[in-house]
Structure formats: structure tokens, C-alpha cells
Image 1 (cartoon, helix red, strand yellow):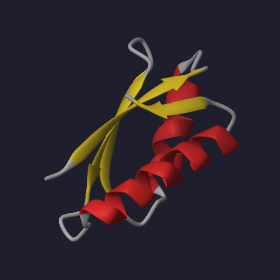
Image 2 (cartoon, one colour; image 1 turned 60 degrees about the vertical axis):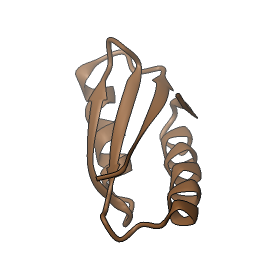
Image 3 (cartoon, helix red, strand yellow; image 1 turned 120 degrees about the vertical axis):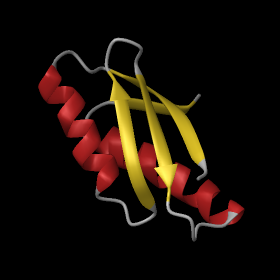
Length: 76
């Protein structure tokens, strides 16, 4: 499975971590997500059907959604 790591800043508690997980998991292309608040990162595993172009678009969507939820996001 393909995955992408993101740097996510601004998570200060477990609730923040859960908010980021819910936000990313809601995207259609996402198979699973792991978030580590201490390391300020999220690792997104994509669905098998995603193409390279689709992965690039979905990565942008991840950061847009995370930023809309109040956190900073960038591909790592």
C-alpha cells in the first residue's frame, strides 16, 4: 500500500490528535491514518485504487482539510 507522511503542527492534546485523525479519515482516498502528536506527524495510507496523480491531489486535500481544522500541515 502507498503511504505519505505529513508534518502536522499545532496538536496540543489527545483531542487535537483525534480531530486530525477524523479529518483525514473522512477523505475518500484514505485507507488509514496514524497520527503521532509528539513527533508532529501523520502517516496516511492510501486505498489501493489510487493513482500517482490521484495521490498528489489527495495529499493536497489532506493538508487543506487539516488546515481548515486549525492545524498546520505539509508533506514531510
